[in-house]
Length: 220
Image (cartoon, rainbow, N blue to C red; front, top):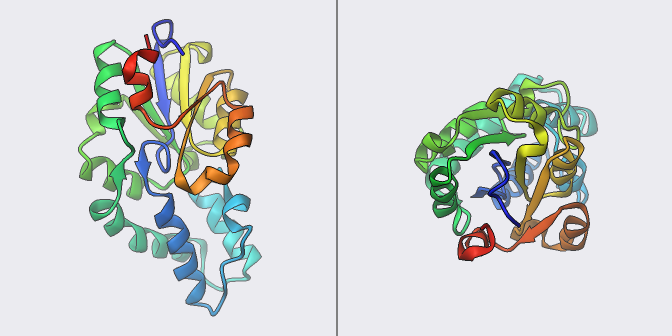
């Protein structure tokens, strides 16, 4: 699990750097309830890896919503932004790991399926924006995860070859996106995706419970 031969570290955001997946499931339940709809058991898996815009399209089509795509996205932004500012925390060891890779001279980026307004809210509330040279959302590329587009985009903007990048992800679609981009991928444990642990371990190069594992000498 050496990082000393790598030049860049690229992180997913929700469930990987920040503990926020619980929030999105709650928002889906609350949002659908506005229309008298129950949240289907397969919803989270179905939308896994989709960009913010792709998810809005999926909701509109699957649940036959009359609202426009912008109205759907704006509702989600309003529902999430205060939670991001006040309730979402960093994953265990994440801040120390960001300091660690900064000290080793590795450049860092974020590649998230989330929308820009929510990303800005959480980066500022947790005071971690300074660690990242590039912050990209899947809405900025042609296809969301598991397509490699967003990871290749961030690598290009960091001016680092894909094979010199390490990716941290929490769900299978994101792990597959990193692998499809030709990068080394660490799967990060998250309560939301515990039932997917075997799949994550199979897809990823490495699996960690938290970032302290890497700080305890495994990173080299």
